[in-house]
Amino acid sequence: MKIFFSICLASITTLAGYSQEKIDSILPVRGFCIAAPRPDGVDDFIKFINDELAPRKVNTQILRVDFNYRFTSHPELRDSGALSKLDVRKIVRVCKGNKISIIPQINLLGHQSWAGTVNNLLRVYPQFDETPEVKMPEKYVWPNADRLYCKSYCPRFCGMVQTVWSGTSQFLDSFYGRRPDNSENNPAACFKALQDSKTPRL
Image (cartoon, rainbow, N blue to C red):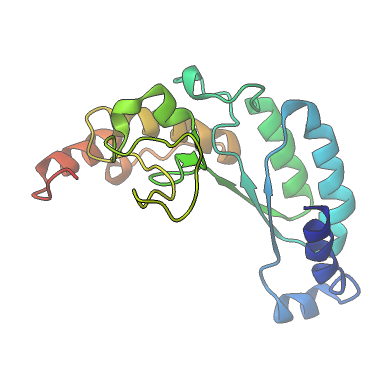
C-alpha cells in the first residue's frame, strides 16, 4: 500500500513545477481517492492535504466515507469511531482553502459486503438484502458457486428508500451545507415511482 501510495504521489509531483494555466490545459482534473480518516486522524489528514496534495496541484479529492459518519437519523448505521459533522467541516474547509473539490463517496446499491463481511446497512437491516438466498461463506473465494462478488440492497424493499435517503441527505448536508429537497429527488416521490413501476421486485 505504501508503495502504491508513493507511486500515485510521484505521478502528479512532476506537475508541481508547471504554471497553473499550463497544468489545467494538460490535466484539468487531478484527482486523488483515499479513505476518510478516523476522528483521531483528522488533524493529520488535514496536514496531508496542506503539505502533500495542495503542493502537487491536486484539485479533486474523492473521499471514501461510506458508513464512517455519525448519522443522527440512523445511528445504528455508524461505524465505530465515525466522523462527526464538525470533523467533516474541518476537512471541507481545508479543501476549499486549497481549491480542492471534495467528492464524498458512500456505497449505494452494491458493495454492501466485502469478502466475508457484511457491511452496516445489511447487517442492521438484513431484510433489504437483494439476494437473501445467498449466504455469506465462512471463507470467501472468487469465483464461487453463488457468483457472489459482494452483496447489494434491493431498492424496491419497503422502507429502504426512506432509510437510505435520511442518511444520505445528512451526509450531503455536512459536506455541501444543503440537502436536496426538490420533488424529483424526494424520497416519497421516489418510493411511489418504484411502487408504480411494472418491473417486478427481483
